[in-house]
Image (cartoon, rainbow, N blue to C red; front, side, top):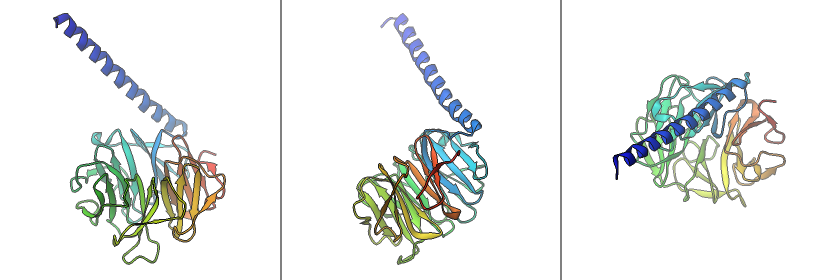
Length: 294
């Protein structure tokens, strides 16, 4: 090939790289301007509640945002370079120090004790593979669970310093699970996993996963009411369903959000559901809903 061809090829690569960087800048600028206007940044990939600051944490693919419940604006939280891009899960422990756990599709798993001011990588004790779901223990400070794709469910009892594999999980991979302090466990609580085959439940002694919720398929997300741990919510393609008996039976909630990507229960009976481009809230266990900006 001629030197002229190589020069043209290099110029083309430079032009393509500049275009990609410009597109990324536009996406980030769009998210930032949305937060300044008070509208929801997006597209949303995860939503959780921070009991320490009484605020919502919202993750897009590129950034993490905070919104105090008494406010109507989203503030961007600065993230380490290693965690920017491809975010997929965020969770916060209900017990002090209200640890934030944040993961991305590139295997990064970070922890923050101070509301997102500083971060520490805690993925070194996990096998290589994508971390698709994380959940703190409902009550025990320092305990957390992580699901690693094609590997299984891992538990830490020291804020993520060390991890121990507990089991392979409920068959198919999943992107969302939650630990609850619902009574009746042989140990300290229960895990509920949302999967394409339905809702699965296991005691945290990891004595086996069992499908629950007759007739449920393609469960996207799951949450529980901390004030009433036996009250379980699931997000389905066609809407929201609620169980008042620990996941044994479910009722479909009319007018509930469809195609939810994340769900979290907050104090005082509030339930938040995130769709790709909006967040809705219910204050009556899912019977009625309003946009978070209303």
